[in-house]
Image (cartoon, rainbow, N blue to C red; front, top):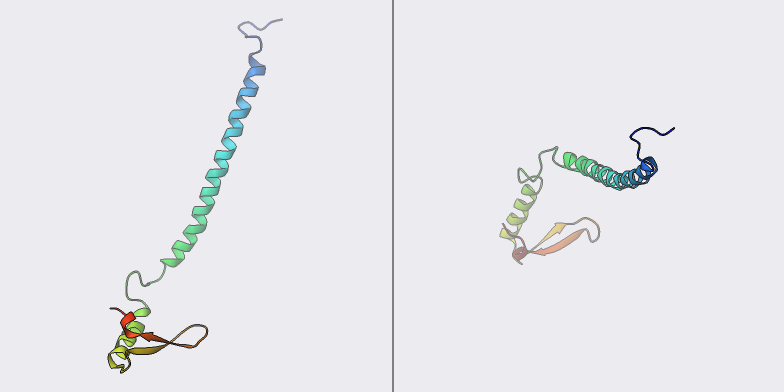
Length: 101
């Protein structure tokens, strides 16, 4: 017999309504997981970058190099200095007017 208080067709219509709702959650879940993965990957880079004393807190490795360039410029007769470069050519001529304090 009939179930008291049951609405005919209620169960079949509830399923199609719930399925699209569940499908809408999956793209959101994927977006949240993708954002979480991105943050995790970037966090590794940020942690390793700030782990050691760097130029963000002191003059770092460039302090003595820049001081030697400024000293060389102070003694340069031509207004240029030759500095060691990475790659080719091994030495590059730089105008002292391009080096600022």
